Image 1: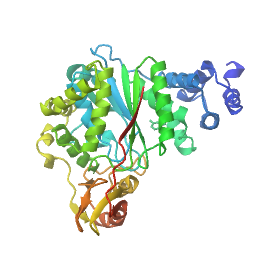
Image 2: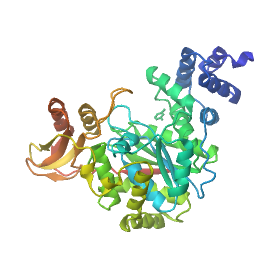
Image 3: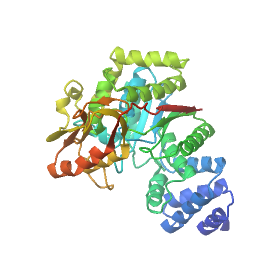
Image 4: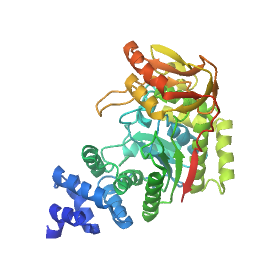
Length: 438
Ligand code: URA
């Protein structure tokens, strides 16, 4: 090993504010992937990167090395421009469940590999797994074959995809190095680029319910990820969207599947549809299925109106072993033993629905994971959530709680009540789709 490739030499160079060479970055990722770097050395370099930052070229190199640390799905046999969407997440964010079949129904193949939610509410996989029988653990070969056959696949992170990220993320989580733009960027983009995509649309959320609380930081992250996508030859666009109240009216797993199915039937809440159409529009443009946003929007709306998006969801559920009858009969999805309506203490306008308070209450009910080994309860959560700007009478419903355990319901109730603020004057909800970064 050349002296400059020793971990301590690489760590020292970043500690002292130098730009790492592609060889140094490759040595780091190779060492982490093959267990040649000790965890304390990797953690020291992560902290040096956190403090010193990385240039755009270094971040591209890191992303590339992390992507190549494992398998890269081969979708060359799938005709068309394959476009995926990634969201930095939010409370009640079930956009993927609506968007993937919708965009696929418009002729753009959607390869989607998602993560599980840690903390708060479940992730896309947890939501899908609340459909009886639905399998998210497909091999990369089965994933590719399914996209070729029906144009869409929604699976979980396989062990072969970006193994360096799995190790590094676990270290970042326990060494206070998660909130670094180059590290987040390389982590997200290495996994997305390993999916075999040709183009990518990002939903970068900001606000109280988002990973990035401040819009300026969300913009910085979005700009960095768009730049990496372009540097790697994959056209990438990002939308900045506000996450100051839960998205839609349901938070949980099965309850979000029901809301997504309703959305595919043309009965989705306005905010969920707004984000879905905005992201879908960009996906159709990148997938060359439309030449303008207005044409894209018309195609998306038509795919909902003519039932083809719902039919695509049915194909997806069936292909992955799920019970497609849930689409026509939501009582086949897991249902909680207890439901309780929460009423407003006074009449007025909803001025706030705190997404973090709602998420924490959903977590308490069992809808999310407090640690990696925790088991998600698919049935519990909240529905009928009022939205900012709506008027409620005294005693009018603010939401319905779905619980499987009465003491937990009792414990969540005060938190849920505290999430809502009712005022005398109407307020306009925050602008949801804030900015497009190309
Ligand atoms: N999500 C990821 O996959 N990686 C990060 O670093 C942060 C959020």
